[in-house]
Length: 284
Image (cartoon, rainbow, N blue to C red; front, side, top):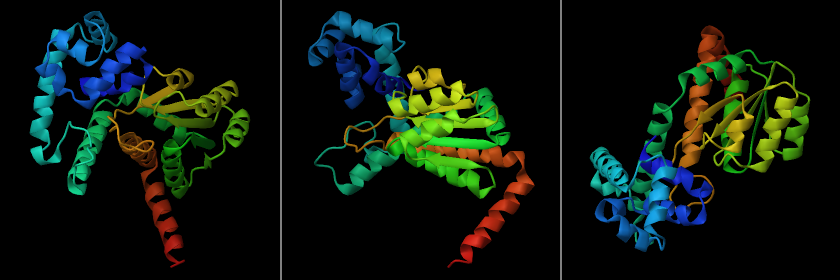
């Protein structure tokens, strides 16, 4: 995972003074490249000592190392994304629709690339095994995460898997409580702190089900409740309504999971997709 994504992901879990530094750098990472540690401390209305603590909190030895990492990363990304995309800068009120669209697209491409590049293949294989062998698959998420849960449920139903998408928190907990060893419960939460999704996975685990978490933080409470975890990496723009970039990263993982399960019974999957497609076409 890139240092910019690490900083963006850490912002909500850091103490206030360190979170202020994280948000300032996430908004304009070039500040670090162009500023001394004293100047950054002044910009963030904090102390030099706090900047040093921030560096250590995001896994960097010190400010000099942070400057080097960001300079290298910004250089690589500026080569990857054209200058016209405005990559690395926030969406501004003065941006044209084309400029704003280019910025969003660049962030979404990067989120998919970072998420897939950092996939834990061993965890992915274990999750595919669990879903493939499940008698019942429960899927739950709140808000934008519910879209990813619904998409995976739809895909699994199309190939004959018993996938149940739960839209109500009470209903989700009740279904999870009736779990068994061949029940798989999949919870989606980018923050990894959504109370209802945590309760859903906790209940499923207590009922001897296999729990899977899809989250943007490997150290989140949701990850702690899950037997297996898939982590997304996304830098959300400040101008957003709920998830934008993180939703795209979740959907990329949904597609990877579906393909993994589909490959286990390839001939059956192709046949099932054809039959369900023919049935849907008959309604037109």
